[in-house]
Every structure is written in structure tokens, then in C-alpha cells.
Length: 261
Length: 318
Image: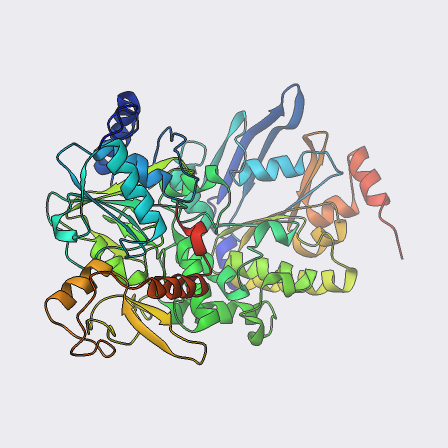
């Protein structure tokens, strides 16, 4: 039995979202979104630009406060938590991978320092151990060990994205939010990154919410899929089921819009 | 010789009252940066406007004031501030650390241990220790509020990764009473151990940045470090060439253009006091009477050295 299978057997959802609504004045950011995320599960959220997927993700990750609804993480109400608690959660149990690695990295700090920051934030005070862990994680995301003291600005886009992933996963989070992690990368680099992500998710038993407009990414990574349009969820189900047999007109349009090579 | 055109110590009473309230709050919450309505002072920012306002709010006519700049009593900054208070407050002044009741300092803590009843006022250029790591003021305030100080160690980590040791040699961050991380102003890290458990009151004033913070007497102050790279209070590995002191912070003075140099105490009062007691260093001949004040050449060379070593120059003080 793999770790993932063991973890998916638990019947308590890790994240339970009920009726989440966020408005920007009169406009709807996202409306009435509900879902459960179980440990070890990867949930894909797809939809066109402006469909509310990024709003939803930032509400879930605590970057914005939703107007209505409830978010429970591991049985605890996230919106009721004090800010101290929520921020502690977001640097230990949670991780957030930005679309643009420059948003998620400290560009003036070396790769090792970037990976070590979360460790130091939770109280690591032994230089040798921090550096050892950073080197280990750079290896796991296929960054050569001799680049540990280089700044991210000297890295390629793909390496920056992998560094951002290492920096996020070093404290062993259980829930990872990803906002278009492969956006802006060329296809061969994308493929390697997806491969890496799939391996890490499987090995570490991570729960992931991944927002993307790229159906190939969710086909590879996601177990379940939510399709959003105009701030609302129009269809959800198992990834293969939704992509192979789309029911909602918008999903059908989305699936048929993918270029075939 | 008080100039009657000014209120005592230049500032009006309501302003001094406002500053005293900020000082009291700072003392009640050690290490916390209290905002205050900093006034325009008759000197440029970077010349100690914060320290001068704090000193003005603390002074009473019975006080005896000492002003030091990089350890010296006779450099421009020290001389002009001392004369400013002589003129506007008419208080007595001194160069002897032990006799002073209020000491305004730029970038040094005197070598002579401070005692109860003394107030040490620091001039602070940038009060926010996290400033160069996180440029947003809203964010740094939040980090202080939530005690998120991991970033401070990222800076130290970078030092070790790049230089093999913690290369931060001045303005070395400290944690106060296990709570606030504080910038001790650009004092050399040699002086950091003197911050903690001092019987004197230590006040920090940043004029341009409009912040006051404080260390009440006998406060616990810990310099940040790593378990395997502990904090060390470093100084040049020499003895003073004038007074022979082995344990004081030294300035390196370039004496000619062929590589000649000497090391002398940065604290002029301490050095002169030792020489008056008959202590001799490598370059002070046995027969030569010690001069009470260092020669002008010495200060000149000293200033040159410091601006090279710190890369800070005068922008260091506020």
C-alpha cells in the first residue's frame, strides 16, 4: 500500500469549503463554491481568464478574505483563526506556488537562503542543518548542488520555478496551493516540471489545489476537476470523466478548444 | 550662556512633552519603535536630529552633557551638538564618561561602564532592522506584531554562505527581552554585549524616520546568531598604540602612504584617561607627555579609515 493510498483512505476531508463567495463591489469574484478536499488528493480548477479561479485560490490561501462562506482546515475554521495562527499555518502546513516565481522567491537572496527561509521562520537555528536540508531539497528538484549560493536571478525560468517549489515544500506542508505553476514555461520545461511535481505529490502524499487554464496539466496531475465560469462552478467530477465526457456546454467548449497537434 | 531667544533646550515645552510620552512608552515596551512627531531641527537629517530631540526632552538644568561621535568628543558632529545645547540649554558639559548624566552618542557605547542615573541617547539612521530585507513598512510592522523574525536569520545565513562567517560588523540585530528584534544603531558589534543588563537608561532617536525606542535598565538583550556560528564581539586584533589598552575598540589610523598604520582607542576619553594614569602603548614614547586631546592628524586618518571600513560615511547617523 503506497503512502498515498493510505492517506486517501482517511474519510475526514483535509479542507472543507462551503458556500464561499467573494465580491468586488457589484461584481462577482467567485460565488457559492463548495467542495471537500481529502488528504493526498489533487484538485484541479480550470476555467478561462476572469472566471474567478485565482480569486478562489487566494481566498482559500488566506490572501483575501471571502465575504461569505466557511473554510475548515483539518476540522478548524480558518476564517475564525487569529492572524498569528493563520500565518503560522501558511508557513508550516500550507504552501503557495506562484505563477511567477519572482513573486514567490526572494530574488536578492541565494538559492540556499530561499529554501532555508521557511525553516528559519519556524525556529531552525543551526546553520549546518539548514544548509544540509537546503542542499537536499535542491537535489530533489534537480538543481545542481554547486548552485546553492547563486541568486535566483541567475537561474532560468524553469529552475526558478523548481526552486520556488523546493522552498515551499521544505517544511513538509500537507496542503499546497498552485497558481498556474507551468505558466510562462516552454513545453519541454513544462513537461519536466510536471513530471517532478507528479513525483513529489505522490511521494509526499500532498493535497494540492492547482489552478490552471491548461487542460493537459490537470489531465496529468489532478484526480478531480472543477470547471469555473463567471465566478461559479459549472461542473465537477473525476478528471478523466469531466474531460472525456463533458456535460456542461462551457466544458464542452473548453475541451474542444484544445489544439490537437 | 543660555540664548534667551530659545526655550530651554531649544524645543518648546509641548514638543518636549510629546517626546517624553514617546520615550515613556518606549521604556514600557522595550525594543518597540514608538512613532513620534519629529520636528525640523536646525541641522540636517543625518546629523543626529533624532538624538538631539531625545536629549532635549531629557535635559534638566542640573544635567552634565557629554556628546560623542564614533567614540570621540572632538569631531564635528560631537562639537556642534555639544555647543548647540551649551547655547540653548546652558547645561554643563564634560568629556568624562563617569561625570556625565546625559550622553548623546553616534555609533559607540563608551568603554567606561555606565552607571545608574545616566542616560545614553543614540542617534539612529534607520530604526527598522528588517528594512533592507522587507521594504514595505506595513509588512515590517506586521512582522514585529506577529514576531515573524525568520527573515533576520536569512540575512545572517547569507552572510555565512557568502563570507564563511557572520560578516555583519555593525548595526548587528538584537532581540530584546525575548520579544522585539531591534536595530542597536550602527554601533560596532563589539559594543553589543554592553547593551544588555546596563544600569543606565538607553534611548534611541531616529529623526527622519520619526521613531523612538528604548532599553530600560537591566534589560535582556541577545545578539542574534546560529547555534553553530555563535555571536562574537570582534575588534581589531591589536592593542592601543597610545595607551596600550587590550580590551577597547580600536580605530585603524593610516599614518603615511607607505603602509604605515597605528591602532588607537576609538573612545578618546577612555584613552586619554589611561594615558593620564601613566599607561603607555607601542608608539607613545616613555618620555613624551601624553597630550590630553589626540592630534588633528589622527582624527583625520581615523575618519578616512572608518568610511572605508563601513562604506557608510556620514550617511550613517541621523
